[in-house]
Length: 182
Image 1 (cartoon, rainbow, N blue to C red):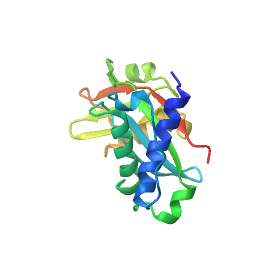
Image 2 (image 1 turned 135 degrees about the vertical axis):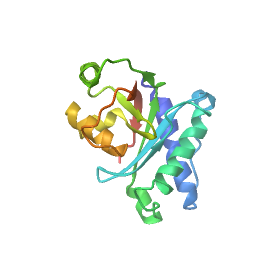
Image 3 (image 1 turned 60 degrees about the horizontal axis):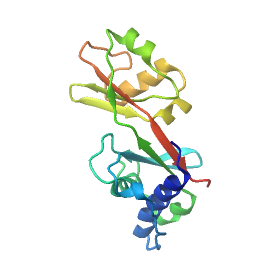
Image 4 (image 1 turned 90 degrees about the horizontal axis):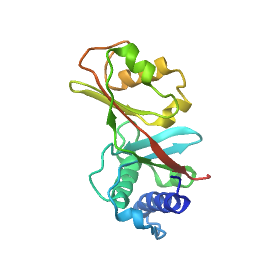
C-alpha cells in the first residue's frame, strides 16, 4: 500500500512538529490512519547525508503521535548529531517510514540467515544479549552487499563485524516510505 494522502499527511506532520520548535506554524495533517496504532521512523537528510533518524520498531501509540515524537527526536535528540538549528530547517529533507511488525526469523546458522536475507526489501533488527541495532530497508541503497550490510549492523550494535553466536536473534520488517521532494 502506497497511500499518497497518508504520505502527505505524515510528511506534513513531521515537518510541522519540527517547525513549531522554531516558531513556525504547522500545516494541518489530516488522515484517518493518524489515530490508528502505528510504528514509524523519521529520517532527516541534508544534501543526501544523514542528519538524524529516530523511530519505533513496534507499535505502542497512535501513528500521528509516533511520527510527531520521532520527528522531534530525529531533529533534536539523535545522539549522533547536534540538535537541528533553525538555519538548517529549510534545507533539511524529511522522510517518514511506516513499519510492518518485525517478524522473528528462524535459521540454523549465519549462512542460513544470509540465504534468507532479502536485499533491498528487509529492514533488520539484530539482537545479542544487551547488544541490538536496526537498519531500515533504505540502508541497502548505501550498503547493497549483504555481507557489508550485516557487518555494519553488527558494528552499530557494538560488536565485531564478523561476530556470530548461536543465540543471535534477528527479526525482519518492511516499510512503506514517503520523502519530501526538496
